[in-house]
Length: 636
Ligand code: GLA
View: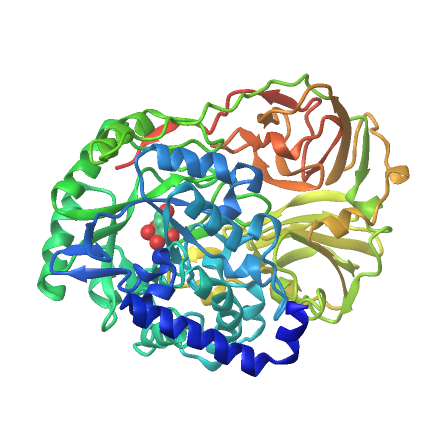
């Protein structure tokens, strides 16, 4: 009855309600603000600066932060890693937001599953952590193209990270979507986000003076009201600052700390200091060593940072994994792509295990806490499962008949411009280019990043940055020339990010004449790719398999599955898929020799592994409970 009358006379009921509230306030001599819940009422100032201090509302606040990227950690383990962060005495989580993963095709957004940013941020809040969000649009972070979507490169005139219209229009649409999710999570709206970073290390790029003010305004126009920060390393600090935004610094050594502190004070005056990225370790590249940083040195540097009156964020607290094809690359003198593991020699290992850095830093940060720190969660068990022998396989040449018609084109088309994925091109993976030749000679062209060249199905070598020519031996009659090109990861840091198109770029020449009439197969190896060849197509592995090839293996786990590491001794180079999850690339040049396989991605019961091997298969797939990331080398 009451509900009914409320619905029928909303005006009158509202008036009555207001009258009751007003009389209540007058009688109790209270203010309107008392009607706002207490937890929101105290949230008016947020994180702000007062002289040399950060203040959270009325109290001095030290940011003790740590970076974890939700997209590099299986969602099932977010809680475990965040609890470990809290138990280490940290009070703030920092994370990047990868645009390329969230908007894989123009206007098509993905914020679900492992990309559920809001769930991650809210989980941090629930565990008692504040959040500093680093939404880019460019994030560097050893991710393909620094987190920018590859479809931006469809425009041949694209100028990434500038106010070039083609770039800012795309940023605007992405930010419209992203910020509508972020705004309610801000501190002043009751959420945990206390600060937001404007772009990332723009000072080291510095192409367009109008760009940073543009990004700052783009954030503010969409309702970002918390403290804004920039973050720069020593090369960019001078140029990276934006008016009205607090500058922070990124570094690894105590010498840099001294230099940068002095510089910050000279340009910014008395302001709170923050090391936004104190690098607790470093990433690794294929063909290099496994970089490590001594735990005592980490403790000493963190102590010096805090002693110097600076807040600190540990980059990385927990690195995780470059699952799939998401790794980035560097290209200064030489192109070098990053390995699958993003262990980073961080405070927690790639699999979330405790390290010497963890215990030392826990003691350090614990000494600032009034209350005892929460106990660290129990370590997660690791397993060595029985080795597996793959029995069935499919050569790439057989697969071609199941995956649909190739794209036909007079000239080669680069990866980003392939007419696939509703006009968004191909972002990651491999492409097979095929044409017919009738004579021998010298093949030349620009192949990014690595192309295996075949005459029919016989491999005759590789083309890459160094080898831009290859001799085609004498052939008889019409012969298929095939080049399987792998995108090994787009550069994420450096001046050449506009130049990161993959596949065959421009013409491919035989004896200086451009080859024509290509058939192009997009081999992105997404889930939908594998759905195109069903199990009845697989055949027994012959004594001499034809490569490249896919190898399949089913196996049963009796008990509840645990974390493990895959070891591919005898295999040369490829990608591994377990129960549909792309675990990433392996390559026998190292340094990384094992791939992390998280327990939650295994099933009690039947499991499946598919390996795509480019060159040479081993006889078994081994599991181990101990990762091996390569020969250790201390970072200088
Ligand atoms: C810089 C970037 C980070 C990351 C580190 C190196 O500081 O801001 O995104 O690339 O370097 O790990």
